[in-house]
Image (cartoon, rainbow, N blue to C red):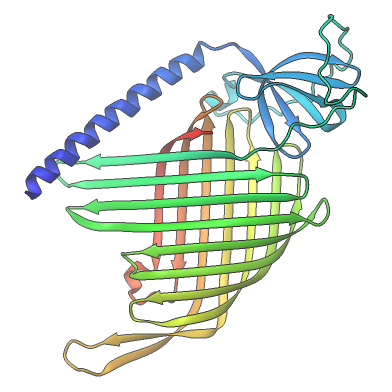
Amino acid sequence: MNRVKQYILREAGDFILRLILRILLILSFLGLSANAQTSQLHLSNGDRITGDVVQRVDGKIVFNSDFFGQIVVAEVDAAVINIPETPVESLTGLPPIHNKWSSNRSEPSSGIAAHSSDPSGKVSPPESKWKGKVEFGFLNQSGRSEVLNTSLRTEAEHQSDSDSLRAIGRYLYGENSNIVASNRQDVSFRWRHNISEKLFTQSLTSYTRDQISKIDLNLEQNASMGFQRHADDQQKVTVGAGLTIQYRDAEGVESGVNYLGEVFQDYTYKINGRLTLSQAINALYSPNRRVRSITSNTSTSKLTDEAENYKVRFNGSLQGQMSERISLNLRYEYEYDNAILDKNTRTDQRITSSLGYAF
């Protein structure tokens, strides 16, 4: 029965791998044969929309997007950047070329009337909507060793003038020589409220379950304050600190509620129209130690150990946009949790590549 299962998994993995490679080949072909020049509409709330400028008239930009259709926005609330469809610097490894704001602000009217949101002619910015992405990664190796790794990640964001919402879900599963090497599910929801242009408050709720680390339930609720700065139109830096309430139910670890101080930092760099580099790190520490209890196989007595309760997480990603919806993603993730009973599972690090679809 196990051989049949291995055979089915191997054949399914080979089929999926061949399918992904063919899709990537077709998408790359289409990307290279696309138009040499396109445009991006940069909105004041940070959104970027790919498409073409229809017209500029009376201080308004009429912009056409395949995804959103035709929209109208005031020039003071947006800017247009012309970007190469296939940036040369991304292919040759040269430093990124910084795009300049489009200087053609006074195109003569060609008879195309601008759309307005009311009879008075005032233009309202387009309504903000939820944006999301699904990433799927798969690896199947057979022969000298049997390896099966699957990763699924979903992310959704909503941006308004003063609030930013983000939800992330992740599922990781892996086998090595038919032994489960990873089995983890986690979900998080973040709400940021802008107090001013640079200051914000943040609430982050997260849930984690990890079979390998023997964490049956880990709930965390964070409240913090942060500072954000746009170094330029391409870079954004965020730092902050706060308090986290943690509830954990895990094997060999004292269950209950604990309080941890937390610091965090995020960085985003839009290298060019297609490549985006993101990085995030946060560290948690509690002055209250966690009690780890170990049952001896030769005795009914329990060996106890008080461990420092701290955790460090790092996430770095490079996203390559193949089209408006399809992307290739390379991620490096690292986590160390000193309160876990088994010292061999306190560290979790992985490099994953995945195919993403935006919606």
